[in-house]
Image 1 (cartoon, helix red, strand yellow):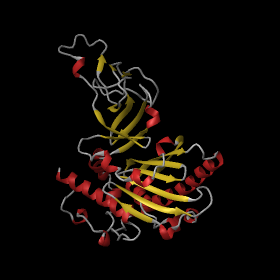
Image 2 (spheres, rainbow, N blue to C red):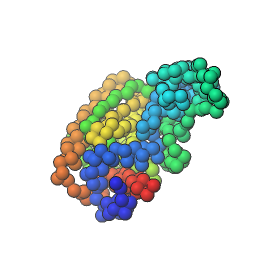
Image 3 (tube, rainbow, N blue to C red):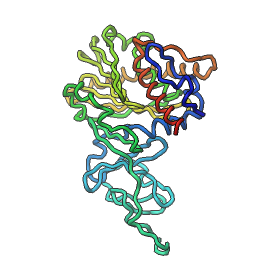
Image 4 (tube, one colour):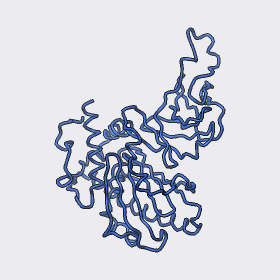
Length: 356
């Protein structure tokens, strides 16, 4: 259904760029396109490093439609195994856990070593030519960075080091990987995942949608920088509570991971598509040891307030996109360069998908 030579798919310079067409956000066919063109060919945040700190520790994730089992093996390596038994597609695990000695399919009891090699298959003695040594769970690529685990399904994705290049230097030694996990807060939002990402990637709406947040940021110095695979929105902090004095850094790692960094606090956001008009957002909160309990509680309240405001506007935008009234509007070069950067990556993924 995609024509790689369609006008709307052509690369667009920021100064003349228009937003993606409404059908990219409302047509159910784009859910499958996004799955194959975007999510199956990019790096996804899949676990916290502390979840797989020791041998046999494991966590569940999904990239595109592929269920993954993130696990630390006997050899100390972290792997992302396909959580799909080679027998008849049963799950090897249905929840995360600690110290598993082996992986046993919940359907028929086939047993795998922690590296994915089949070790036992009950009652298969009569199967001619059946050799467990030739059967192994497929694996995805894995990278660990700043206390997070990322996975990619294909070898065609860029090198992970290229995806995050420059972020460590910009953090100037902030030890994000040593911040302690506090909790996860999740939301389901009645909008396409790209609507949510678009909204995240610009501060243009802050004064209109987030009046309290606007008092915490120096909007005159709010800036956006883009690289090949990620972008950064930054602003000095000017309010008192809950963040104090310092700098707000909002990193976006294509296609769906956000890092919200404030003094002594990291919040990771992962956007998971659930269909053309729904998505799921996981917010994980991490704090430095010295951040007091009362500040953490205020941070959680304030973050939830901002998130509720974002949900309301994103759901309204989704209804507008589905109304039939909308035609692609011009982007603001001064304030929406992050949106343009993301949408150009999506356009490139769509063009490549159409040519394949």
